[in-house]
Length: 265
Image 1 (cartoon, rainbow, N blue to C red):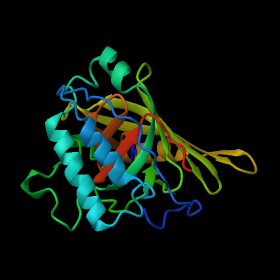
Image 2 (cartoon, one colour):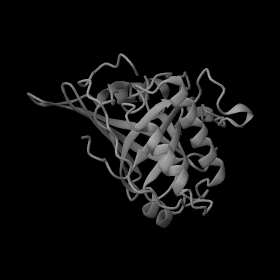
Image 3 (spheres, helix red, strand yellow):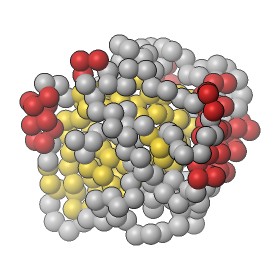
């Protein structure tokens, strides 16, 4: 069962289970601010990145050249200004930087056929998380998200991801053709990688456009009983500022999120 934080989110897809109308996503980048972590001001890089992912349908319509440019910019930002290693362990820091709502603006594989990152490409450390045995089979698609094994096309409407630091929970919401899909669960800091949040999904609901809300949370109970743990995926924060967050997922996906949804016009 695929599960991401976008975690997505992490675990993204052409041919998703629920397809939204093929609207053109005209993303208007917000004014970037300085990054946390390394303390370097990367306003120019943030602007370039947001411009690069605009009009790509959350990554679904990005060609290889665009994907390569995005990966190159992302890697530059990750190495120039990594987040504070205590982002997930310091409550005050987490509330200041991570807590609250984020909108998924771009998702695509962390690796592509074009060698855009060279020897400096991002590599996950202990991706299976030891005994948690988290699935790491590459999702390999763009413009979609998969939360707890429910794939949804996110190319027309940004998915919402909310971190609740006080209760150590993360919730993903996205509109699908049949209604709103909500997937959530508790998260903990990885003992392997300080900036990695390991998620155990326990809630899944589909609020139908016409009809009742369908609760399919029991699927996670069954999965946990078989596997011996609710741990299902992880999201590693590799860059964060007041307005923008970059993450990498256990399924080899790249996620770019912003604080503002930014209205499509």
